[in-house]
Image (tube, rainbow, N blue to C red):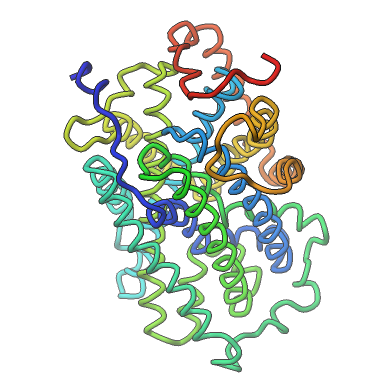
Length: 462
């Protein structure tokens, strides 16, 4: 089986719509839950400023990823980029960042599925009688099975349910906006006086922590690089269309929620868009946003399983991890061992940690990965200038996006430290220990010849 799996590769069956579904599907759940904790940190205006600054950060991420990934078209995303451009130790760490960011995001989605089931049960008169643990386990197991069976079915499923969840946000806005229901929104009353910025400008910094949650995961489109039919066309189109979709959805979500709920409640709500639908007085919107919340969480968890398993699989294929994980299923052509291995880890986080802790660990891992991207981009342009290799997409204004991304990452680190300093130190400590383990033990097993497999000329100055 091991020999056979080494000869079988991943299938190139995906198009631009699947890339969009993968990127937006992972992230759109951030509009349905999690972003609103930023309101609790700094108020409604702070959450809006954090939303737009995070949008700038992720636009830089999308532009950088589109150029590098359309050129380094292999599974593993940023891990593979680091392997080719920077070196082994950076690649190992970036691979871990990806796996933990996506696996913990998957756990947060499963937690939300359980919470939603309990909420619906309460509305139906069964409050306190439903145990959410079986629904958490069932959702992760079902999506892992779907990923096991094939990437085309997995991301086609994501395309359908992600589109539904996005349309639900649009309809909620249209049916509650001032031009449709003039007396429903109460922005002036809910955002006046101390409610505008209850903690001053420091609250805006603190809100940046959860501003990332609007967009966290859009960089996951890079994990499809080895399975799209045309990487040079599909990856830039799907990624950049995805970030535009998310900026629109994030702004509409903020507008609706802060106009219907006081910031004190909104800052702790588990499913803010669903709560907004309940406050609208429309049973249609309640059902629509209930299904939309469920679909958004399933789409995100589905994409997270896809992305985390590709990163883990790529590390196994290059022997950064045991080569056993680098197997491809002979029939379904999926990294099935990586998929199965990560299931109990996601279940452990979902069943044992509160939501804000899971979100924080996911954000921290993602933030460490974003800090790597500007350095990677600058090294990529220096080693292989534009006239040396063919790129599928060339992002404009270099190096401004890279420098801006690095600056915004620094601000966000400070924002995270304000509220979750202990978790930040613990997470960095974990990656330091992992790096030492890799350097002194695992590196001897790495397939070093796999680092430079791209048909590129020697780097400039080599």
